[in-house]
Each structure stands twice: as C-alpha cells, then as structure tokens.
Amino acid sequence: MLTIGAFARASRLSPKALRLYDGLDLLRPARVDPDTGYRYYAAGQLERARLVAWLRRLGMPLARIREVCGLEAPAAAREIRAYWTRVERETAERRDLAGFLVDHLSQRAGRRDKDDIAMTTSTLTLRYAAHSDRGRVRPVNQDTAYAGNRLLAVADGYGPAGGPASTAAVETLKALEGAEGRGEAEVSAGEVLNLLEAAVLDAALAVEEATAGAGAARAEDAGTTLTALLLTGSHLALVHIGDSRAYLLRDGGLFRVTHDHTVVQAMIDEGRLTPEEAVTHPQRTLLLNSLTGTGRPAPDLRLHTARPGDRYLLCSDGLPAVVPDAALRTALTAAPSPEDAVTALIAAANEAGGPDNISCVVADVHHDHDGHDGHHGRDDGDDRDDRGTAAA
Image 1 (spheres, one colour):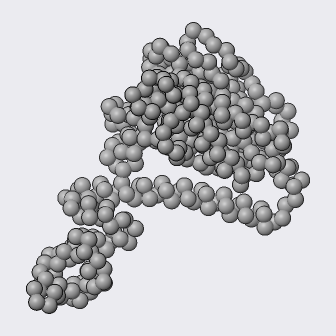
Image 2 (cartoon, helix red, strand yellow):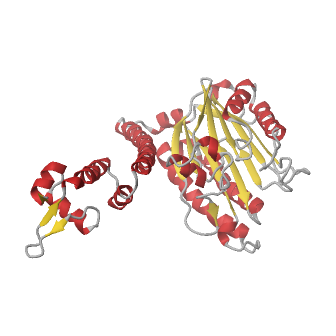
Image 3 (tube, helix red, strand yellow):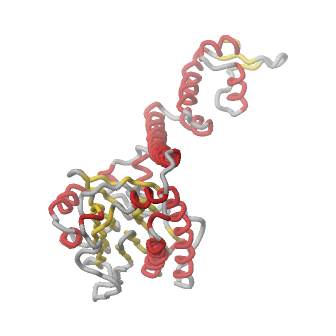
C-alpha cells in the first residue's frame, strides 16, 4: 500500500486532486484508516490514476472521465477518439472566428474611411440559378430554393406542413436582400452574422405560424432545415441548420462547407459509425437541429472569403443522398453556367431514383467589372408545375 503522498508522486497527481477524485467517486483509495481517515492506495491503481491525469490534460470533463475509466480498453479508446474529434471540430470553428475577428479589427485599426469600405464591399457579384424538383417518389415537394443578387437559400421542410415551413423560412431571409437598397457598404462583415442570427430567429417564428394547426402530434414533428449564404463585400456569410448542404468548388476541388445536424453525423464524429455505414443506417434522416415551432434555433454561423471563380452549390439532402461527391464535382466542373449545373445535378438525382425532393442553387462569384447582371438561366420565381411546390 502507498500513502497518499507517495501515490501522488508516483501518479503525478497532487494530494488535493486525489482527495477531489475520491469525493467524486472517480478514484477511490484502496483503504482508509478508520481512526485517522488517512488514505492508502494500491500500486495497481497507478494505471487508472495516470489515465485520469492524461485525460485531464486533454481537457476532458470529469464526468466523462468517469465513464471512460469504467470501460474496457478498446471501448475507452473509441471514447477518447470521439472526444478529441469533437474538440478538433470546435477548435476549427473557433479558429475561423478568431481569424475573422483579427482581420476585422485590423481593418478598423487601419482607419479605413467609408469610401474605402464601399469600394471593398462592391467588388464581387453573383451569377446564379435555382430550381426545386419533386423527384420520382414523393407525392409533393416540400423544398424551397431561392437565389438573388445577394442571398442564396435552400430549405427542406418535413412533417404535415413541411412545404409552408420551408417557404416561410426562406421568405423571411429574403428580407436581407433589402439591405442592398441601403447600400451594401452599410452591411459590414462584422454586422452580417448578427443580421443572419436575428433573421433566423424571425424565421423560426414564421415557421411556428406556418405549422400551427397542421395536425402534427407534436410541434417539433413539423419544421424545416435552412442553409443560406449572404454576400457582403468580399465575404459570404453562412447560416446553416439541419442537413441541407453547401459546397464550394474552388480550383478544381470540391469542399463541403456545412456540417450535417443529424444523428448519424454525430455518430460519425464520435467514431461510432463509418460514412459507409451511415448510408444505410435506419436513423440517417433523423435531425438533431432544425427550425420548428419550439425552442430557440441554434444555427451554425460562419464567414467565408469569396473569390472570383468560386462556384457554390446549396442543395437539399435529396441530392447528396443519391449522388456521391465525386459526381457532384464532375457535374459542377463540366457545366458552363449555373443554370446548366442545376439542370445536370437534378437530372443526376432523378436518374439515381429520385427518392426525395431535390433542390439546387448554384452561384458563380465574379468581379463587378466583369459586366454580369447576377441572374443567369431559369427563373423559377413562383412558377408551379405538376411536380409539387414551387421553388421560391
């Protein structure tokens, strides 16, 4: 048996930490003297003590350390891998935000005047196309797709009032196009994320109104995903909630810029499921986050630096569910215009069976002086056809 002092030195844990872990039932001493209350530890406890020390250095919460220490080695290894994967993802998101804040504050420190900002924020424009298709299986289309001079959006409704929910969410965000009328210079990169967050709160209220009385057993049984990009200056601000997606085609490479808010994606992140297994998982469509009539929405908000030559794709999950990323990249690369890309992508999904509604928005980034007027190709507007709900 080792005294608490000797055990502390051997395990590299302080006596104070050992007393804390005893109180938390994380590392109980092997024996406690009934008269003095002095703690003694067995040499065989050193391995667990060192594991606790290592996990604390990783920053793992004590409650989760207790769970990990109770597992067999292979299961504990999986839990540690899952924890660290989550830490790396959260760190990457904070790194992006930190980078933006450094750039934003550096610009302020440089004391650019308003004319300089106006010149910077008017250098890019979008050429775009949007369309929504019912697919070959679903009886109605509950998707909504929209593309404008500054706003791109896709929403995928579900439940008894899925169509009205997706339309309500996108219609609410379209108010952001009005900022253009005040002059794009007034919407700085620093403000745009706040604008988007406020707009999503309004969208949640609109969804609540649209789904009220729709016959859902619970309010959360009807709602919508929402993925949108808002152009401001040289940045595209992203708001994302649910499992619709945004992709970026840049320099020949295709990059996914959103993270699915689904049960299977969470299991992949934690190392409990492979991407291949997720394709056939029975809970692959179960959302962890969406716009419903209950609770406060928790969207992902992020800024992306746009470059001339970039091509962005926003789509509902009916596209990537049946068209792999390699085929998406091929179609986006080969299409000469956003309209051609949208047509090709929807056709590919339908050729693969079209089991779900399919909505696509494709936008190319250009310099203002390139002389493009923004829209290109089909204007779905409020047109309706026999395939279901119109694309907004």
